[in-house]
Length: 463
Image (tube, rainbow, N blue to C red; front, side, top):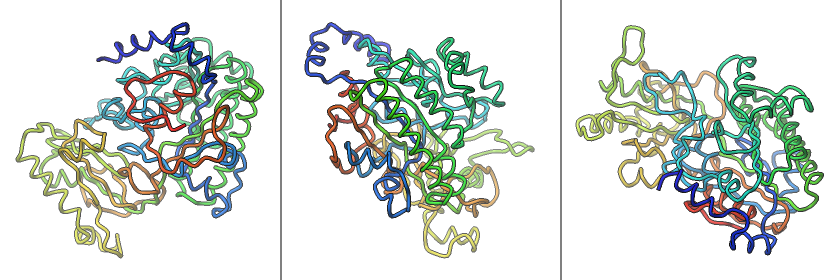
C-alpha cells in the first residue's frame, strides 16, 4: 500500500467515528508537545549530579513523569533517519529517510539533505493527527518541507542566512513566519544552531503554543549536538550549553501550562548519543586503492563500481552492479584489511597505541537487512568507537582527525549511542522507569496520548 493509500485509511479516523468517540470518552486525547534536543545523552539527565550539571527542568521530567534509561536507535544513528523514526514508529528502510543526505557519489545534489516530507513513505504523527481533525504545528523539525502540518516553520537551508530566510518564508505555512516575527522578533533562518539561536527558536515554539494552541507540536534544538561535535561530549562548553537548553525546557513547559492548564503532555527526546572520535577512516580511499573508484585529474570521481555512503560512525557500501560477485569480493577484501589492528598501525604508527581495529563489524545479506537501514547497500560497515568516516577519495586510509570531537552514526548498541525519552503530563505515571526502549516505540506511545493510530508502526505504546 502506498503512503497516499495509508493517508486515505487515516481519513477514516476523523472526529465522529465510533473509535474517536470512544477515545474522547475515555479522556485519552490530550495536546502533545514533542521537543527534540539533538544529541541529548540520557546520562546527562539521569546522572546529572555525576557530571556537575544543573538541569532542574529536565530532572523534573524524571521525578514527575515517565522515562527510559536509554533508547536504542536506528541504523544509522544520525539526525534525519532518527527524527523520521520518532514520528513514524518504523525503521529507515521502511520510512525511506536513509541518511542525512541522499546517496550522491557524483555530488550532483550540491550537498542537499533529505529535506522533503514527500520522501517519507509511511504516515507520520502529523498525518494521523490531521486526519483526526487535530491542529498540528512545527518549528524546525527535520524532513518537514511540504509536510501536512497546519502551522509549519520548516527546516531548510541553502547558503546565506538572508537568502535562507526568504526560502523559509516561501516553504513554511504562508504568512506564518511574518506573523510570528512581528510578535517575537527575527527567526534564526538557515543552518544556525548556537545556544543563542535555540533561545530564539524557543520564543517561536512558545508563541506557537500560546497563539495557535496546537493539539500536536514538534520542535527541535540542535546547539547541544553542535557543541559536542566541536568540543566533544562532557566538555565544559557542552555542559554549559545543556544547562542553557534546560532553561528553555522550563520556559516551554510554562508556556504549555498557560495555554492548556494541566491537561497536556510534553515529551523530550533525542536522536542519538555522542562518542569522541580521534581517527578518520576514509573508506572511499580504500575503494579507490582497490580499483573500484576512478578519479579525474582534479581528484573528483569519474566512475565508480563501489562507493561508501558515510554516516559518521558507520557507512553503507553501495555497488553500482549489486550482482557483480567480482566487485563484491574486492570490497570484502578491502574491508577485511581494516578489521585488524595491524592495518591501522601499518597505515600510520602514531594513530593508535592499542589493538583496536578501525572496523568492528561488516554486515551483509540477512544481517544487513536486520539492521533496518540502507536497503540499497550491499555492505554496512560499523566502525569502532573513536573512529569516524572521512571524505577523502585517495591517500592514507586511516588518519588522525584534524580536530577531535564528538560524533555519532555508529551502529545501534553501544550505550554512548543511546538517545533519550522523557514524558510528563496528563495521564503519565510519575517516577516510572521504562528501562531501555526502542526508538520505534516513541511514535506509537505519543499516538496513544493523541488518540490516533499509526497502522504501520513497528514499535509499541509504552504507557
